[in-house]
Image 1 (tube, rainbow, N blue to C red):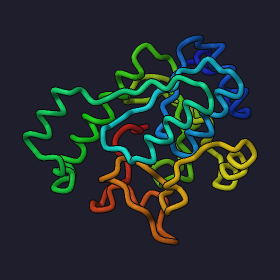
Image 2: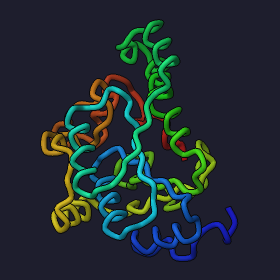
Image 3: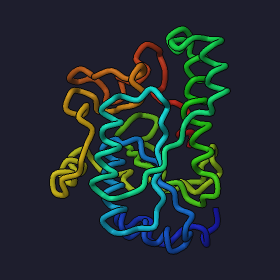
Length: 229
């Protein structure tokens, strides 16, 4: 990355930073939302400030009903287009027919193959033509994320990757959602701080790590491969 490729004020508040990114990379900023609290806040910020950011989401085909409901509610609330990207049909058919729908529980390799087909491949299609990838990653979400930079050159996509809410706390999220009445996933109030695919996500007990409910059956790093750093 050169100094010319990074706007000078990316340490400013999310609105100013996103405005500068959109000015520097017109029509090249893409935000991927998984409909979590952080992503809902970013959707609110983008729509509230009329930022020319394309919003996309990855429909793995195995999301919770509550997540599908929230997609519709979000579109209606903000009058915004959210482009959905799906797994490639023939590749997914071959995977399920060969390994089975629930092969993710049999080996880490199979689970990662499923994530590749359902999430990573669609993500790369969603980011085609983009210059900047905006995410809702926060340092507090997991041990793997607490040393992330606010902006970096992403090794997976090759794009500038910007995490506007990186330093926000849980209290910051709560204050924003209450102030602006941001619609959130109903599962958050049922013990799901982190929400992914339905088979791969469970509620967490009090005192457990927020991402302990993701791929809980394996001794993993609680990451699917989308965010390599």
